[in-house]
View (cartoon, rainbow, N blue to C red):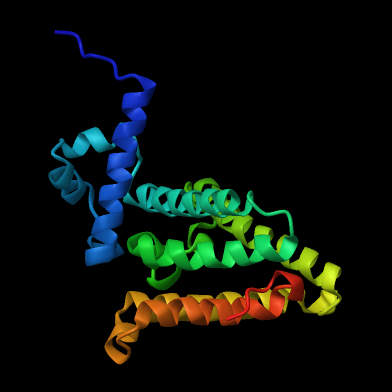
Length: 218
């Protein structure tokens, strides 16, 4: 019997299933425990079938990262479209970063927390182009934040242009800190109002970058 050819939609569905299953394995067991055999067993297909879609587990891992950054970027763009003011757009971006981090914990951990291979680890290998694409996708989010923060500072005159990259990195580090504390449940251990604290800390971190007329007073 001739083999039935999958439609593009079916092929994409299989790829997504592989990537989501790989994400679960890496998040739970670590990158070193990801294997084609384990993936196949979880999905319920033959291990050799996965090679029809990806060359090896390294490529799968890179594509998991790329997909995570694509989802995060699309959400960031979507959440900012309802605002015209640069500071409101920037605030929405920061809040979306926190929301993504706590509602997509597995993606967030592999993107920002786990000790997993980075772009430089693939330099000079066959996977360098895929790794570069992942890095480019990740940097789109940083470029979006940098552009919005530049618009905010130019309209307010509050910060010199030379400080913008540093300020973005500083704010990102602070937002990452509260997301990580929340995801690790440390925040919940020390506070019975962790959700409210998370929101308040996020708002406090954003406040210096919001023009006065757009601030929501407590």
